[in-house]
Amino acid sequence: MSETIYHQLGTRPVIDALGIYTDLGGSRMSSRVWGALEEANRSFVRMPELLDTTGQRLASLLGAEAARVTPGASSAIAMAVAACMTGSDFRKMEQLPQTAGMPSQVLMQRRHRYKYDRMVRLPGASLVEVGNVNGTEPDELEAAITSETAAFCLPAHLDGIPGTVPLETVASIAHGHAVPVIVDAAYLNFPVAIMRTFTARGADLAIFSAKYFGGPNTGGIICGRRALIDAVAGVDFTRFEASKYLSFGRPFKLDRQLVVGVVVALEEWLEMDHADRFAGYARSVATVARHLEGIPGVELTPMCFTMQETLEPEPVNCLQVRLTAGQDRVSEVADRLEAGDPSILVHAIGDAIVVDVECVSDEEAELIGRRLRDELAEKGTPAS
Ligand SMILES: *Cc1c(COP(=O)(O)O)cnc(C)c1O
Picture 1 (tube, rainbow, N blue to C red):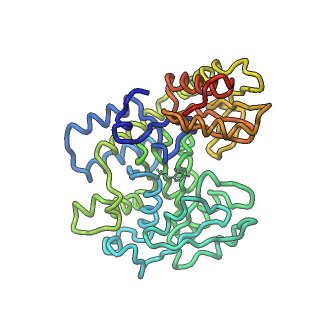
Picture 2 (picture 1 turned 120 degrees about the horizontal axis):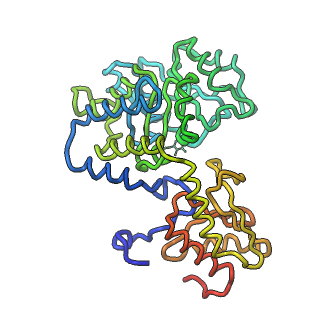
Picture 3 (picture 1 turned 120 degrees about the vertical axis):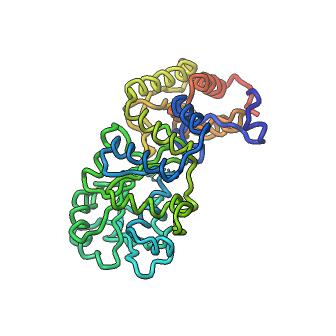
């Protein structure tokens, strides 16, 4: 491969046939989004004003009272919890992560515990599990609320799993005690109408990650009730610099370019012809498959690799390459693809190599097809 900026910096570039992953750099920004970053780079703005006005735009796009760009969904969880603890009290915003004098418990159903729930503790809150591994009952949620309760937290991708209380019920119980509900809907952005449903169903704050809609890897959005978004604005970096209050969220700083990029990426995502997007994936899958047709012991099936990392029939975003004869070769082939330059990263799932094409360009699809053919047809020299 030709010398890239990554090579110059001593890093091997990778071809990402895994999908959208933070540790591979998120997604590929479109030329429209990239162009917006470039344009934003040309001049300066007042960051508090930019955050406020872009927030209004995001709110109208998402059908929420108010919204704000955040540096990712993880920081949004931390700032949401901070906002629920401090309200509009600037002294409390300075005091965090020390929580004396404010409610500091965040309730979560036991079966909803997930990777990112530790962000709740960042501003000093404690996470309190309700129910057990078999599930949680509505009356257990009701009984768990005390004067120490700052918020409920609910990961949208686990909403409604067996044994759990659904968002609407959680919201009605919480609201009966004037406790807000924070929903992490990081990747629930398609069909696009779903993005408006969380606040409509009772979330006081809903959170999305821009990495999943073609925005910057470090971008995110929080939207919801006006008073709480004002409190998020109070705890974020803008007030630390622009007011006399040294509030908690100063490390969660944003670039002006990134703020603009998140808004333009969301606009593009909402306007996009998603049938076209999926047609593009189907074409890339066909490109990879074309190189592999006719190889004995190889079975090709276009599939959908889901956010839960399972395989479903539709909508197609990946090629499942089953090795019907030499299943033991799956991880060896994946390792050899990874060892090359450029390094090609694919999933090894059971008896199949799975090539996710969501982050794969046309040129890369050709290259993946050729490299896989070399490995599977066993006619090539071993990859170095
Ligand atoms: C990726 C992800 C996050 C974190 O989002 P960032 O924008 O990377 O901080 C939070 N929750 C879920 C469910 C995610 O998939």
